[in-house]
Image 1 (cartoon, rainbow, N blue to C red):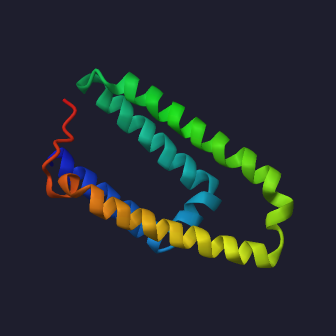
Image 2 (image 1 turned 60 degrees about the horizontal axis):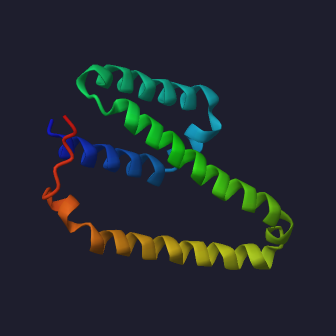
Amino acid sequence: MPPLRAWRSACRCCGLVVGLGFGTLINETRWLCDALRWGGVAYLVCLGPRTSQLFGLTLAYVAVATAIHIGSVLPASTLQPVLSSDRIRSRAGIVFGVTLVLIAIWLAITTPELMTGAIDLNFT
């Protein structure tokens, strides 16, 4: 399977899993979350001999994930008393929902090359 088709299939599967509510199930079920995590580890180990970029990609992923978690968890923990109000939580939900829709529109507009296959994601 070409890399772009595999990428699209993976995105569709993830979207379907989350859309059907299985994301919460996976998050709440420890063994299922661990199985998916170790499946990803096994995939990367199998991919390792094929690409010299694996180490760099892994470091980049860890750095980005750590920055995102630090950037979201620390402010959220300080805002917890403020966000416990139902009125503020409702307004924040609306703002976040609109923001996600705007991000989706932005991605749809700015990434037509990726969707049409003009960008080659083959890292080998």
